[in-house]
Amino acid sequence: MNLYGRHFLTLRDFTASEIEYLLDLSAKLKEMKKKRIAHRYLEGYQIALLFEKTSTRTRCAFEVAAHDLGMDCTYLDPASSQMGKKESIADTARVLGRMFDGIEYRGFEQAKVEELARYAGVPVWNGLTNEYHPTQMLADMLTIREHIGELKGKKLVYMGDARYNMGNSLMIVCAKLGLNFVACTHPDYFPGSELVAYCQEEAEKSGGSVTLTDQVTAVSGADVIYTDVWVSMGEPSRVWKERIEALSPYKVTSQIMQMAGEQAIFMHCLPAFHDLNTETAKEIHEQFGLSELEVADDVFEGEQSVVFDEAENRMHTIKAVLLATLQSNGEL
Ligand code: CP
Ligand code: NVA
Image (cartoon, rainbow, N blue to C red):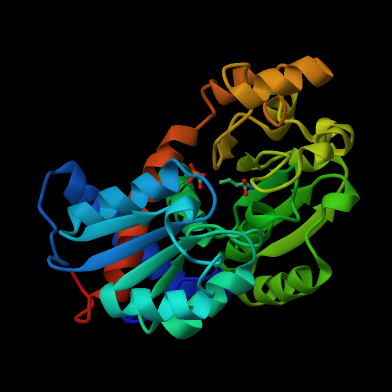
């Protein structure tokens, strides 16, 4: 397996074996980190982290992974670069490509990260766009593997806004790796039909499946119950009302977890709205009187929740992506 020089923009571009290779590499790197075995394979490399949206996990995962691999990184936020305001994406890409060995980009349209990749001349990694969140998928699959083993045949039920980056990306990775993916939500929030058709074809090859339903009874027998925020970064605050109305029946409560069964784990890419300890939560509470949204606090904090293992795995899996795409001789 050789992923040297490849971009990492969406898992649509990767085969099941390539994704499995990255998961295996992540597990090895995780073990090395736990045992404090140095793995500075990319000393002298420089990477740029471009963030047009905020981040805790993705930014820290890239920075820690880069440092563990012996690399240096430069963080650029929207206020501190010329990109988009005084300089086009194509020009920015060609400048950064001359100075850095790879570029991470988090922003809005997928088309932007694709354009960056076309011009950069070095690997570009998607740290989240409106459409996809591919590095999160590796962390999620590694977490499922660690908690419940073999991925093939597992049932993952995604509840909430399934037509955005998380729903789209989970449907792709499940379809490719042979999981049974269920989008359980209001039909207005089903993933787009072109992507569904693509994933159904992929699922046919892998032995997985793709199901869209508005019936919460679909959670029965699930191995994974997954949700994400109902309003994503960059969306206008006026959509809160319609989201709360449409998606409240799909909130992950202890009843939902009971209906799923005790084998089920609860996952969330984070950040999550499960209590009133954030500014946004307080504003929503004032406006709508709700103290939790997509997930109940007792589920988030409960025994079936693996959300912090999942967050940790962002770092190990991003490290695998950096190593696989930057190291020319492949293996550890
Ligand atoms: N899950 C995730 O991408 O988190 P951040 O927005 O904090 O990077
Ligand atoms: N759907 C969320 C994911 C955050 C990791 C967002 O785009 O804000």
